[in-house]
Image (cartoon, rainbow, N blue to C red; front, top):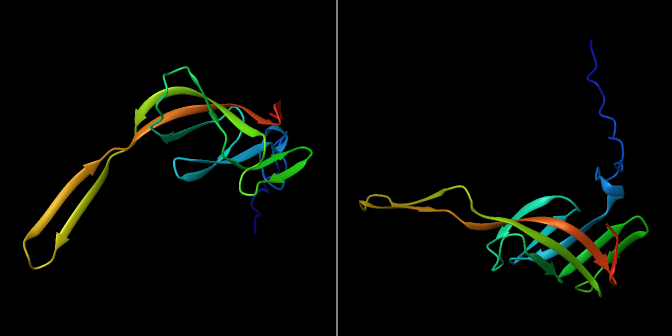
Amino acid sequence: MTQAPSKAPQEGSSPATGTANGGSYAIVEASGRQFWLQPNRYLDLDRLDADVDSTVTLENVLLVKDVSGTTLGKPYVAGASVELKVMAHRRGSKIIVYKMRPKKKTRRKNGHRQELTRVMVQSIKVGGKAIA
């Protein structure tokens, strides 16, 4: 019987969370949803009214984790912000919406593509000091 190789944590990552950069991250509220943000990573948000290569600052920070510990907001962390750089405006993948009423010969087919903005996390700041 052979055993599967064990997965050791990668260099520079914490074993508990598996995050790089010393485990620094922030959870922010944007577009009516909550996002887990790490420095130098990109994500797609709902379309922001900002030009490409401009900087957007999010103030609704719910939680900040850095090497010194975790700060939880009530509801937001005081003095915390996340800077994002707008990389591109995109459209999401197509979603087909099909509605049918059985035995009534009623069918409706619609397609939808969400308008998105791809952003790169520049820095996470608490009290004006960048933690990552």
